[in-house]
Amino acid sequence: TQLLEQSPQFLSIQEGENLTVYCNSSSVFSSLQWYRQEPGEGPVLLVTVVTGGEVKKLKRLTFQFGDARKDSSLHITAAQPGDTGLYLCAGGQTGANNLFFGTGTRLTVIP
Amino acid sequence: DSGVTQTPKHLITATGQRVTLRCSPRSGDLSVYWYQQSLDQGLQFLIQYYNGEERAKGNILERFSAQQFPDLHSELNLSSLELGDSALYFCASSRGGIAKNIQYFGAGTRLSVL
Image (cartoon, rainbow over all chains, first blue to last red; front, top):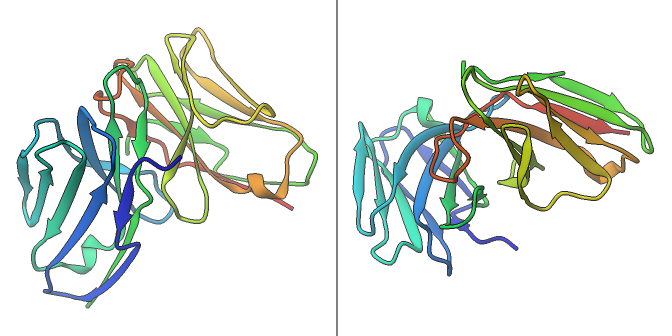
């Protein structure tokens, strides 16, 4: 059972454009994490959000946790080729020790 | 460098065989997680160990097993391999054993079953 659905699955944009990636679920999560994975490497944590409605910024990346803690979004401003990678959201639930990973969004930023 | 070491990086084997993947967690981390990633998709949680004991189980097949040793390194054993077992296998470690703890991932082992 896939608890977290990400959209779009693939995204190819020009350098300088803005984009938003969505992570949706019918389940409530106590925490939501975003990872970026580059070819040949493991995922690297970008951010963790834990409060409904929380917004966190990391340079050109803005992360938001939905008010009901069932969804999240990642917005990238003025995308750079270095942003290319697989973006994964992952949710933690109270009482569960493991993370539930989303389906992933493959982003390609064309110079 | 995440500090998590996985060996080997690549493994090619035949159907029906058995392989062992190894993971050394970051220094001081007590928890080890194993994940499977197929075709560049999201990660499927397999199993978690915390300080030598199994803590959580995900979609792990009966043909697969894992353990965590006293020195905290972990091994994932895959037996009676099938073509569909071809995937990237990641190990992650964290200080504690709950979901909100930050997980640090190794570079993965790419398994090809021919």
